[in-house]
Length: 163
Image (cartoon, rainbow, N blue to C red; front, side, top):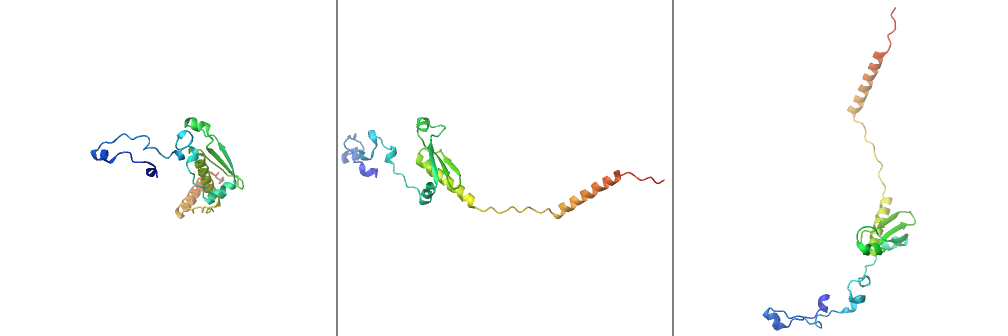
């Protein structure tokens, strides 16, 4: 797409000789209508944001969304912009948060995906744990130990007088 906007500035004769002419400002000018204020490219309004998938959009309707300032490294942008997202799912009370990405939209999407995973995990039915049985040799060993202990205690008993 950017190739369409650029205009060739090097005359054919100069290209054949292997020399490049200095491009004049008029020939290399881009279409500035897509730039932001002050001629900058890439200001937040210029980048089209893909819409949320239908499942995430429906989930967002069921949540209270709170945007806060994220903590940690990142300088002025991190300290001044409210990019961290906290979602509270009203029906279940589950909370999901995200602050690792640079934009509010990316963090919102990450938090919604986390919440979706948490809800899916709640719906999964866990199989009950089946306790393992003791082996036959282990049961026999336990019985043998009990018999030995009984014999020791019997040996300690007082002997009746024979007289």
